[in-house]
Length: 328
Length: 118
Image (tube, each protein chain N blue to C red):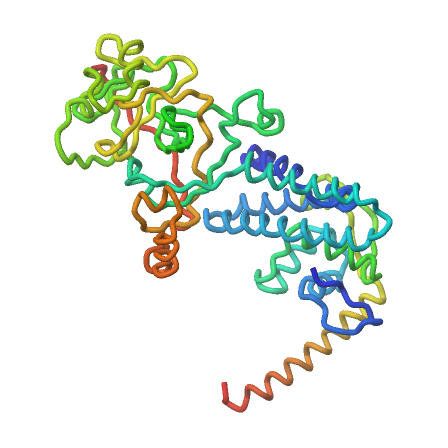
């Protein structure tokens, strides 16, 4: 067993699910051999270094899967032809479509970042693929087949905005249930220890006591949920994160609307973690939230100049903060 | 997915089919072995995915270009049993004919491009 065998086993299990998109006969005949070959390729990739070659491998496997599932289905329909009843034909395709839906809704999701609250780590206009499996909650289909783990401090999360679940936010986990959190002159003090956060960017446009020395008292732009947090979870000038929730902050700390303003993220609102940026395009926030004709024209005219090529395939990483030795 | 050609319907082979046949020309191999050999032959340019590989093998089996050998483990990889494939006499003829055709095409290309027009 190599040290890499954990993730490889996970990828092999996902691949074995994806094989169901092939026609039944093909899968029964070659499925096991394809899994073997897939695992051999994974081991080869694990030995090879380089993020780029791994991503290239992943896209290659995905493209191979997409094209050959379609072509094998086509061949199966063609050769079986009149022998099959229309109903069989429909159920066969239904399985393939179900697997495609599974892949796009359970495994990954595309997401575009509309605001600069994570600037420094993630930029406005980054189009990302989000891994939806890792934090899949127990009870759903995921954990029975796939290993999952709880979000940890320092992880970047994509989640439903608690005040309006039609919106999706991305922030970094600062507090886990039970953690005591406060900010002192823009620095986080967690459980009495001052954090040094390498990923944070401080661009203070103006001093703001509420923002920099949280939690003081609710102010005008504290939302109802935020006020509830102040009322029930602030003790001795510290927020205590309740069970089944997370306290999140943006890396662009002074320009981020985060848990300081709207409270905790319920665990069940967590969607996943960013996998990588597949396209980064320099556009204003409003255009990214909703596609419009002007944005479409803008993209067609400036695709090559405004695409930030150097960010393609960038992986936003979890990073842990350094805790100072002495208690505050 | 291009269909493999049999002598009954002459014409160019698709690159995956041609290189799979080349991979099996010197010895019988299992799926991953074929994949590695094809990558070696083409300097890594043609990397077959599992779906492409087994889709081609299925059609090549049906066309009689390759046949299944026995199932045995590859000691270099692990102790799992793997299905080995080998080339048939028909496969050998077809890959020969294709190599000739390609050699002819290269000749034509060399002559035409030698004129310095390109």
